Image 1 (cartoon, rainbow, N blue to C red):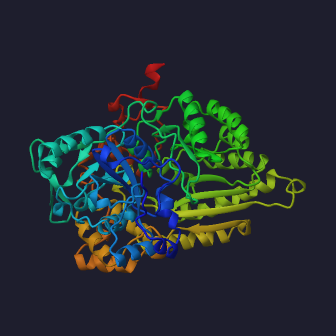
Image 2 (image 1 turned 30 degrees about the horizontal axis):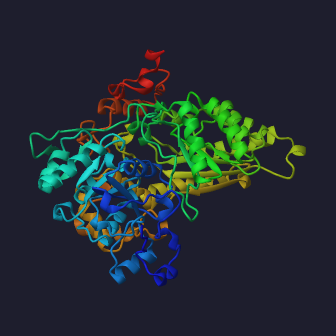
Length: 625
């Protein structure tokens, strides 16, 4: 099969990291385009190194290409130097495998992981020469479809998409592809194809819904324009995740990417009820993969990639019931292959530390705790389920085990936060440092000392969490709180051992607007893109002032979406979707948060969140025993 690059050698030699654009990596899939019926361009709207690290794309890429009649290829946001070249030379954006224009494909699918990538969606469409607005597209253009966590409030980007796929991607695409082929063969109109898709479970076609507003700017109603289209769309979910496709031949890049390792997904969902965490609600209920199946996947993936590291992927790996057995197997297998094991998302307890001491070279690693808040009162509000005693006991065990670097993650701006909660961040960092000096005698430190990095992000209330009703801090309030945190740390006895980092307040405020926005933001995003806003997720390219000017120009107040507290009965832009967790449950948890009441985790007691309606996972563990 011929492999012709879309770009000349001169262009490739003139840009940074040409390997981002040439394709043909190990395990990338080539097909004869004449032998397939459907061509699907799978896009991560950020730079190659970020997109190539995303597990969801690797899963769907492998699954789609396992269909004989489908060829799935990849496309990422061209970096700024390449963006300039494509525009200047008039070269349409191309997919990596065939090096052919994206505009000639049947589908263009975006995974929507982060709100700050929204203008990059328009960059991709624009460079592909595809109309930016869904209403302007015909059968001459791909069907533009979005999936991923941001589709749980797709309204700010509704005008740019033909379809949103709500939920896990393994369940419904075959049906969409088969119907697409039938429509093309029958001469069905594009509009009728989209209308039929809107009747499929998990499929939201925004163009088929009307939004009406009240005088105060809140939503009055969101209703379908046809009687046969559902009023709410329930997320799609894999009921038995050991049986679904999983890639054991992931594409291996030529250059170093963010996650340069085999990723082994051990479960989906989470039993913990952290009230700020969107993923914990969206992916309920917790479903575990069979441990024997995981062992096979791990060995196969390492053999097919040559990677020297394997990482276990989940929201809380410590909660995987067969973790000891899996770890013992991996240690034996990986030691033989000289492969490292990475264990993110562990809770800090004696079991987890024992596991980590087995698999990590303690001289190189740092230990990560996520207390999220500086006081026990605040941790109870967010239902973190972690006490100061847990943190200090975990630190003690870790220092005995040889660790001397600790990362502590906190959030500022949480609901009901007080100055005491803010100053508690410095106090807990100081106590961890003191624990080191008490635990490790001077003669055993070998010239080393404790190294603590305390980091704060700014709290952004997300859809489908108990905090979706909460007001968000202003940029100025965030910065004031970061300053208080810094001063609190500097006042501690062990402050010279503590380094403090904080997130950008501008970007957090913007993320809050896009996370809880409605369709009025489509116009703002389009105009911001026309003013050259792209790569907003990259601090050095985020043009906050341009965004603020654009809001003003469009007559949209960004503060309406951030600092305003919602009434209990307000209709949210995302209420048209059903993530499996009921709004009444989330409201109950919001009230519990305001009262400082803790809730149990799913294994200790069912809270009646609604996810049991799927009939699988942790909701039914006890019944199956």
